[in-house]
Image 1 (cartoon, helix red, strand yellow):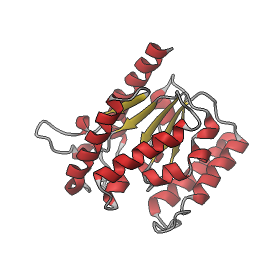
Image 2 (image 1 turned 60 degrees about the vertical axis):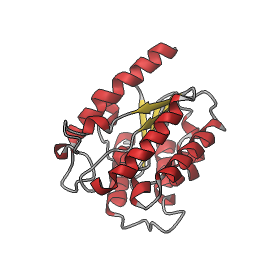
Image 3 (image 1 turned 90 degrees about the horizontal axis):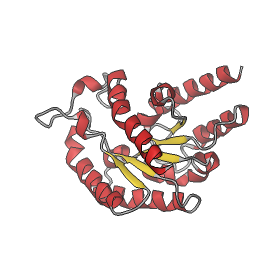
Image 4 (image 1 turned 90 degrees about the vertical axis):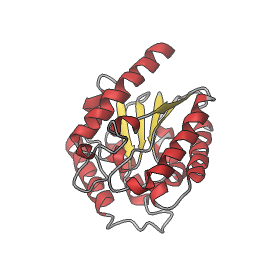
Length: 229
């Protein structure tokens, strides 16, 4: 029954966040309902402690095979579609702190750039996210997944690349911060986005896209854990 309730909740969350029917992008509390749903799920079935926590926008939320893809690593998915860095920061005490994660993997910035935020603003918000995490967990590693290219947002790629570069340079200079360059592997030899990795909306990834991410991310998480145990 618990598993059924969990899957039903995820289905409801998926429907709400993809359609955009429930949430107004102009309301700072537009994610309150989905965050509450996460909390309800946790009360019904306690999530594992010391797991690797994935947070971020729809690229994380829609990763339905995350648990099996990352096995034997234990992971928790707390993505909510359409979110930006400021949303992740706003709810950090509710979608990060309670899980006491061993690692945090974050994917944000995609929607930020699409909402006309500058690369510098995305970089600044990333640092705010790190600072907010550090208030509770001073030593937990934080992995930033680079903003992905997509056919729908290809015109924004220059700004996305700049945000990625700013964050990459920053992570290289700070302990317990890691950069996962998932964007480079999504480009072909000519530097164009690989359209076969995407659904018909040309924004969200298909199973092939997630398989590619898995092949890149999973070994790096395993290596980091083995090196730092």
